[in-house]
Image (cartoon, rainbow, N blue to C red; front, side, top):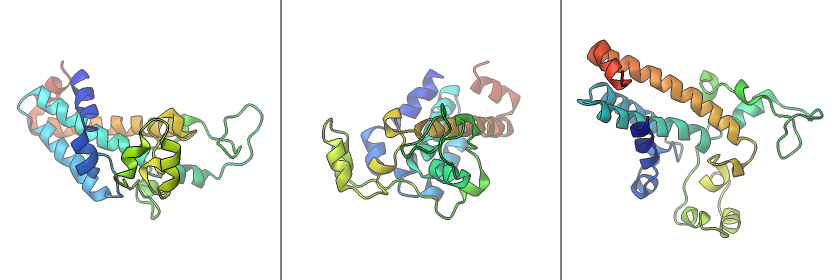
Length: 200
């Protein structure tokens, strides 16, 4: 798990942020990002060592997880539910509308994954870099378009009430990607390869 996590987090290095939008499902490059996931799944399936397979899974899981925090998937899901005014004691969004339970989101909804209005954040350099400087963020955000990473990202709790839904959807997707990766390893290397990948 430590090796997978390290490879996952390393995707946010400077080269990954500047030159590889497919690492993060940015710029609505969905096909390119999906191809990147499959490329890393193939690496995991044919890896010579468990460490090589773990690193590949870390990279592909980063991309899969960022899909939910860098796109409007959660917003489209909530829009489809058409929430109404909040009853007393229920969680609400910024407009006072009630929000459904976090675990009710389906992170693998086929209709939403192919929704005609599904987009992911564009990264507008160099302004996006300035957004992360403490104190400058709110001002820089005002200068950026609504489809920018600064406006669309759900990377931290500070981004608002949709953040927990992006986390839940990402967890669901990670489980699904893990099962797909195990199946690919099993097909390529048999039960022994699956056991090695799981460190059993």
